[in-house]
Length: 110
Image 1 (cartoon, rainbow, N blue to C red):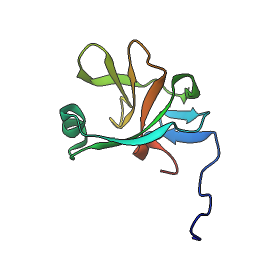
Image 2 (cartoon, helix red, strand yellow):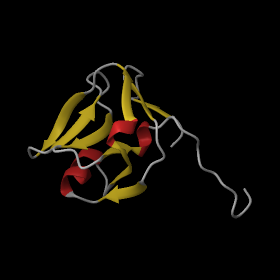
Image 3 (cartoon, rainbow, N blue to C red):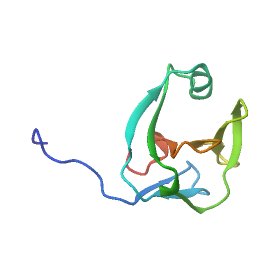
């Protein structure tokens, strides 16, 4: 790859769980990529952090299946998972701050 080349993917970004029962898309460019080091993310990922992309809330659209909420972390944080394969897909916060955090590993092209 040439230095300075644009390697950005085009929208929509396609995403889903490991077993394929949940599919979703992101209709906007991510706002940022982040590594969350909170204790909850450490426990859920089995790592020192979880790697996420923040996307506008309205741009995250579930197109197949019904994610379930798991890995509860207080009243405001909603971690969405596949009920079958248990993949952690994305997190929404209530009240909505205008963005959702999508697990990078859920992206078809991470």
